Image 1 (cartoon, rainbow, N blue to C red):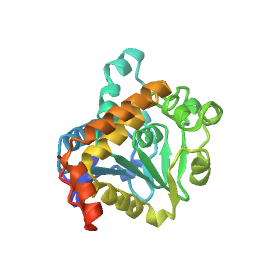
Image 2 (cartoon, one colour; image 1 turned 180 degrees about the horizontal axis):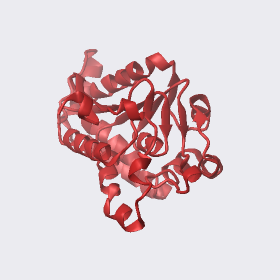
Image 3 (tube, rainbow, N blue to C red; image 1 turned 90 degrees about the horizontal axis):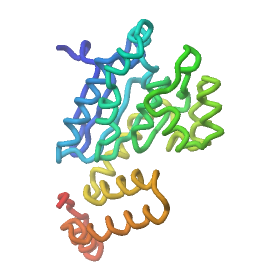
Length: 260
């Protein structure tokens, strides 16, 4: 299968960094089932690769992902939709242990925004448009649009975005806490790649533990979250990378982190 026929591509631009690229440019990277399966396969493969320390998830300059491919939904009934079990495919993305940085140009709508919200950091181009327009075609978000969005921006912004179905600009998304950074359109991918490179140079055990502590504390009490954080920190004191990092600090040299 050629790249032109492959809906999801994996690239290895540098040591420690992988890029997962949506590759349906003619459809604005709309998420059909083949693309969802491709994403799940890509992230499952990368999750188990010890040589991958950070992942950039992106589309192209025109669109990150413009939503679900409605051609696969227009005649679908409830049983068929349930049998697709797309939640298992999305879980492969959301449960990736390495940090994932979404590089968003153009449209991130519907399932596209839900996919971006499965990442840990979102870098958006200044002209990007983000939103949950599902209500305008008679349905609603079904892959986190009512849940991750609310946790990111709060009830009132989430209600506005989901109930009106109108996209918001990247600067507004940044203002309400939906994206991490807004940069010039031409700088989105390189900015995300630079972040991934920086993360890849850090101790992977500490990076993974930090990601887990932040994610798992979202649905727990403050006390439970603090306990998880404290225990994770204590475990890191047994790692070789902890000794290497502190020794390098005092010896004024660059540390060599091995993930042990």
